[in-house]
Length: 344
View 1 (tube, helix red, strand yellow):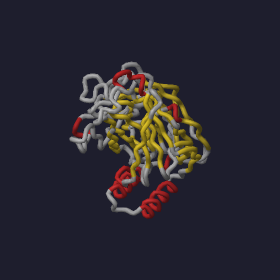
View 2 (cartoon, helix red, strand yellow; view 1 turned 90 degrees about the vertical axis):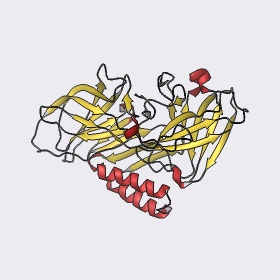
View 3 (tube, one colour; view 1 turned 45 degrees about the vertical axis):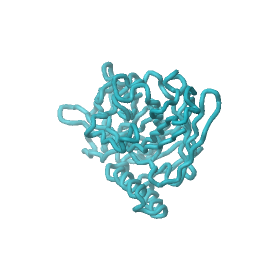
View 4 (spheres, helix red, strand yellow; view 1 turned 120 degrees about the horizontal axis):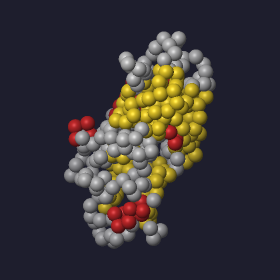
C-alpha cells in the first residue's frame, strides 16, 4: 500500500505501465533477488480553490511506500514464451519513504530485462507472448490510518493506499543492482467536498462514487508488456492534455487513443462504469463536511471522464446528492490529478 507525505504524495497520493525496456544479450543468465524502486511524483493537485495548480516536482509532494507494499516482478523475454512472475515484498524500514527495497525469490533476467507492476494485488495472470492481465475493482477502500499528520491536509484526505497503479521496466546495473523509478499509468480524481450552506454540516460522508457517462472504468485489462514504453505513455498524457483544452476533438482523440492502445496489445473485459471510494465514515468526525474542502481521491484509468460523468456523495444516514459534470477539462491522464469541486 502507499502513503504520502503531503498528498497525492498522496497520491497514495499513483499508475501503469512504464518505461522503455533496456535490452541485453539473450544468452545472459544474470539473476537477482533484490530490487529498489522509487515512487513517482504527481502533477496538478489542488488543495483549495485558491491553489489552482501544484507541481509536485517543485513543491515536495512525493508519493511514499506504505507498510505491507508488494509488487510483481516479471522476467520478460523476446521469445514467444510465458514470462516468469515473482512477488516481491517491501523490506523492513521502507514504509513512509519515497525509495524502498523489495526482495523475493531469485529471478533470472529475460532478454527484455524485468518489468515491475504495483500493486501486486491487482495482478490476475500472465500468458504466452508476454501478455499480462490486471484487474480494476469497483471499490477503493479508505484507510483511516492515512491522516497525513503534520501536513497542510492533515485529517482532510480520504483515499485507498493501494489505489495507485504504477509500473516500470528495469535491468541489472553494474554491480548486480536493480534500481528504477515507477511510472504512473492511472490518473487521479480529486473530489473536493465542502458545505457552504450548513445544510449538511455534521453529516459524515460514507461513500463517494464516480459514474462515467461513456467509458467503462472497471474490469480486467490485458496488455503486451514489452510494448509499454515511455514514449507511448507520454503520448497518452499529451493526447489527454490536448483534449482537455479543446485542442483535440472527441473523434480525433478516440482515433489516436485506439491506435496507441492497439500498438500496446491492449484489450479489456469491461464490467462497469462506476468506481466508489468506501469506508470514509471510519474517519469519524473528520468525515463531516465543513466550509473547508475535504479531499476524496479516486484513481481512474486514462481517458476516463472524457465525455461527462457524475459524482454521488452518500452520507452515513443513507441520504445522498449527485453532481453532474460535462466539461472536457476533467479527462483523466496518467500521473495527473483532476480536481473536481462539489459544493453543498
